[in-house]
Structures are given as structure tokens and as C-alpha cells.
Image (cartoon, rainbow, N blue to C red; front, top):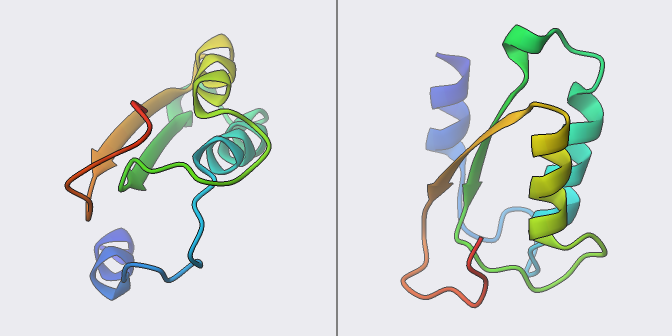
Length: 85
């Protein structure tokens, strides 16, 4: 229920004009490293455009895979993407 409220309150550009998909996923992986294996899931809401950040999105996905973290991606808000993530 709380997650649905957060999604309802979200808006495009809320976190700024740039998107760091790799950095965001890398941070999620780091935060989940000490979680039990049953709760190691990331739900990633993105328009698919990566235009800033240090960590490449595919490298972050590899890190999640290596740590047995499931990543579910929901595409939202963009008709075109420059990044196949």
C-alpha cells in the first residue's frame, strides 16, 4: 500500500534532469548485500535513458546477478531510449 502511494506521488524529473541507472542500481545492490536471500529484489522504475553516473547500467546488472539479487524493471515515461537497459 505504501509503495502504491509513492508511485502515485511520483513525477517525471523529481530526482533531477539526469539519470544514473547504473549508480542507482549499484546503490540498491550495496544496500541489499546484508538482506536475507528471500528479500533480495529490486523493482526498478525507469524511462530507460542513462545520461550520467559512474557505474555502467550493464555492469550494475552484473553485480546484482552475481549477488543473486533479482531486478524487475518497469519502463515508464519515455517512448525512445538511448540505452538498452
